[in-house]
Every structure is written in structure tokens, then in C-alpha cells.
Image 1 (spheres, rainbow, N blue to C red):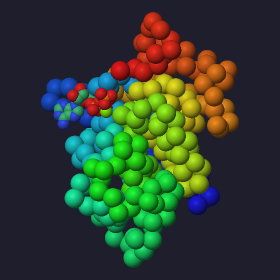
Image 2: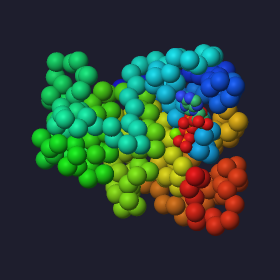
Image 3: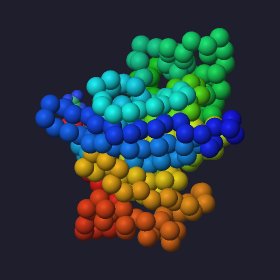
Length: 244
Ligand SMILES: Nc1ncnc2c1ncn2[C@@H]1O[C@H](COP(=O)(O)OP(=O)(O)OP(=O)(O)O)[C@@H](O)[C@H]1O
Ligand SMILES: [Mg+2]
């Protein structure tokens, strides 16, 4: 597991994605190192989900070089659980390993959902469904975990709990994480590197070195927040840190 830490899990060179005449990704370069936690910010429509889909291998119509070594798992904004399968079966859906059941039990325990393994997805709360989605991603033991705004539908308190859970899971399993978010504070609290996608490329990047758990008043975070809001072109009330 430790060997992964310094190895690159994804390398993207000159990645371009067009939809008709529109160039959404325009010669984008990005390296993702094993075990690093990246947050990806950018205005709505800037191409964040397009980049994630490309990294997940869900979009074959990209130009440029895209190398992803190792296993990838994705969790989306909406948990996308299959409603006619119980939570436990959702976790192992499509997972072809002999110990799938045991892995699912462990993953559900890690996200605090042991009791809900036999429940139907529609009976879960939003936070429970999102945790089930995380368990489904974790059970694949990914080296690269792609998270596309997984917390945006959660209420403020549940978000805090799930943030803590994600940091805890990341600390234990150490996948590289690429988290798409609109929330500058979320990016600063969680990530070791924050990227801004603009004009089809990584237009800005900053390292975040403060020790976790972080507080939003930490001086490093305060100064980075101001810079990121400027880069994102957000003006007005500085407490409103969502970019879209
Ligand atoms: N299949 C598609 N066909 C045509 N246009 C598309 C397609 N998928 C994405 N786009 C366009 O590409 C642009 C980038 O979309 P994308 O979903 O990557 O944005 P995003 O940064 O994730 O935005 P948001 O923050 O709102 O989720 C948008 O203008 C979108 O309309
Ligand atoms: Mg998106």
C-alpha cells in the first residue's frame, strides 16, 4: 500500500474534448500522484464532470493522452443506487471477486451502515445513501477515487459528518482522490491540492499544507480562500463561497 503513495496514478496530456463546435477541454494537462487528495473547482459548465468521465474511462471521444494506471471508482452527486436491490447487493453490484460479501460487510461497517445492509435504497436518508455510494466505491479498493460533487445535496450538518468520514477513509485506504466541488471551503478543508478548471485547462493550482482536521479560520486557508475566490471571479460577500 505504501508503494502507491509516490506513484503516479493518472497522467493527462493535451486532453481535448469537443461537443460539436464547442471545445470544453482544451489541451489540458494533469498528473495525479498516488494517495494525493485533489479538489477540482470551476464554474458550472467549465468541464469538471467531462474531465472526470474521461478519467473514469466513460468517455472515449476525447483527444490527447490519457493514462490511468490502477483501478478507478466513481461516486456521483446523486448516489445512483439500484432501487430494486437491497443496499448490501448494491455495494457488490458488478464486483467479481470471491469475497465480495465479506468486502461489502466491511465497507458498510466503515461508513456506519451495517444496520442498513438489508434495507431498500429508497428507504435511506440522503446522507445514508451517499455513504452507501462511498461504500460501493471503496469496496473496489480503487487507487483513484473520483468524486463528482458527492456532498452537494446534503444538509450542512450531514456534510460535516460525511467530510470527516471521507478524510478518515482516505487516511486508512489512501487512494488518490479527485473531488469535484463548487464549495471553496470544502476544497480547502479536505484537499492537499486545489485546482481550478477554466478555459478548458487547469488555470490555477495551489497546495494546501495545513494539518487535518482543519478549521476554516486557519491563516493558510483564509488567504487561499481569498485567492481562489478571485481566480474564480467571485465577488461580493466573501462568506458565500459556492461558485455556482
Ligand atoms: N454529452 C454532451 N453533449 C453536448 N454537450 C455536453 C455534453 N456533456 C457536456 N456538455 C457540455 O460541456 C460543458 C461542460 O460540461 P460539464 O458537465 O463537464 O460541466 P461541469 O463543470 O461539470 O458543470 P457543473 O458544475 O454544472 O456540473 C457544458 O457546457 C455542457 O453543456
Ligand atoms: Mg458537473
